[in-house]
Length: 208
Ligand SMILES: [Zn+2]
Image (cartoon, rainbow, N blue to C red; front, side, top):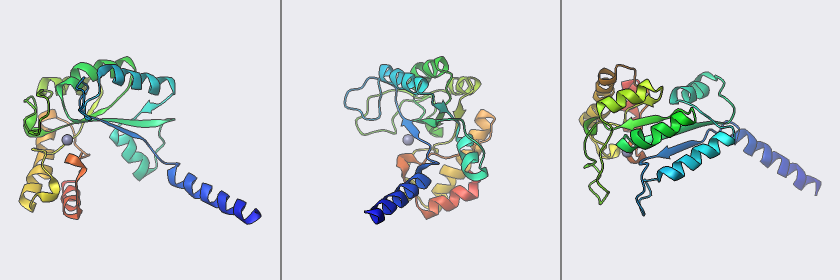
C-alpha cells in the first residue's frame, strides 16, 4: 500500500512538471452563425467565452509574450491564454474586435497574403461565401493594439510544396507582409497545421 502511494505521488509530480508551463491557445476561424460549420462560432457564443475568460481572471497574451516565456523564461501574467484567428475573415474585424475591445483583450489574426480583402475562394469545398479583412481593416486591427502574423501567400498544404514554392510561401511572404503592414513578422501559422522537416528548415531560414 505504501509503495502504491509513493508511485502515485511520483506520477502526480511528473504530470505537474509536464503541464505547469501549459498555456492554452484558443484557435478561432469565423465568428458567424453557420450551422454545421465547425470553423464558425456564433457571435453570442464568442461573447460568452470572453465573458467566461474575463470572470475567471484569464489574461490574453501575444505570440511574442508566449515565445519570450518559453525561450527567454520571461514571466507571463496569471492564467495566460492566447486567442488566434486563422485566415483573417472580415467577421473577425466586424464581430470579434468590438468584443475583444469590450473585455480589453488581445488576439492575433493570421491573414493569407494573396487573399487579403477578397472572397474566400481558397476554400473551394462548399464553404459559405464570405470575404476577408481588407488592408484598411488590417491596419485598424493593428491600431487597436492587436497582432497580425503571416499565414502564407496561398494557403497550400506546405508538405506538398517543393523548395521553390516553400520559399515563396514562407520567406517572400514574410517580407511582403512586413512591407504591407510596416511591422516585423516573427511567427507563422501553418495552413491546416501541416509541416515537416523541410518546412521547418525554410521557416528557420526565413527567421520567422
Ligand atoms: Zn488557415
